[in-house]
Image (cartoon, rainbow, N blue to C red; front, side, top):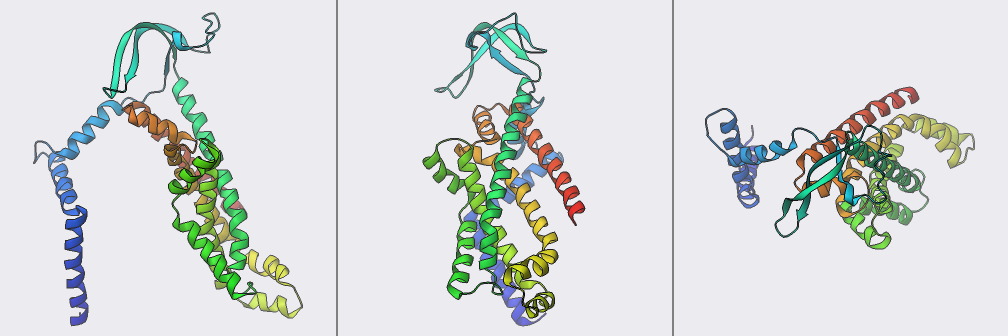
Length: 316
C-alpha cells in the first residue's frame, strides 16, 4: 500500500469521525450496541428495546375485523346485516385530541365485520396499485421522447440534447413527496396528485436509462440499416429496439415495483392510496391495524415481483 493511499484513508477516517459526531452516528451506534446487549442478556434494558416492545405489544395480533358503532351508521337496518357480520354490545371508543389517546365513552351496540378491515385495506391497496400503474404509464409517455432526444445518435441539435438531459435530471431531483404536495395544492386530495408525482419522478430515471442504453448499443446493425437508406425511425424500430427491449422491460418492471412501494407512502401527504390509512392509524397508535397494512403491502410487492418476472421471462 502506497503512502499516498494511506494518507487518503487517514484523512477520510478523520472526516468520517467528525461527520459521525455531527450527525449522531456515534450515539446511534451506542444505542444499537446497547440494544444487542439487551437481546443477549448482557444489559437489562435499552431505549431500542423499550421502543420495540411498545410497538409490538399493540402490533400483535393483527386486526382483521371492523368494529363500527351502530349509532354512527346512517340508515342502519339490523334485519339486513352484511355477510358474516354480527351485533355486539360493548364499550365505544372515541379519540380525545387533547389527551392524544383513545378513551372509553360508554356502552353501545357495535357492528362487527370479521374481515371488514382487511377487505378495506385490500381495496385501498388496489387503489395504490392503480396509482402506480398510471404513474408508470405516464413516466413511459414522458421518458420515451426524452430518451430519443437525449441520445447523441438521434438528436439533431446540441441544445435539444442538453434540454432533454436537463429535464430528466430535474425530474429525478424532485422527490415524489415534494411534488405530490405541490399537486395536492393544485388538484386537492386524491389519486391524481400521486399519479403525477410518480410519473414525473420516474420519467427522469427511465429517460436517462433508455438514452444511455441507446447510446451504448453496438453500432453495426444501425450503420447497416442507415447504409440502405433507412430513416432514423426505421433504425430505431429494427436495430435499436430488438437489442434494447429486454433492458427496457427490466427498467420498467423495476419502476413499477418502486412506484407501488412509493405510492404506499404518498398518501401521507394526501395523494391517495393506502398511505392515508397508514398515516391515520399510526397517528392513533393503532399498531395492530398498522401491522395489517404492512402485511398487505408486503404480500402485494412480493406478488407483483413474481408476476413481473414471469411476464419478463415470456417477453424475452
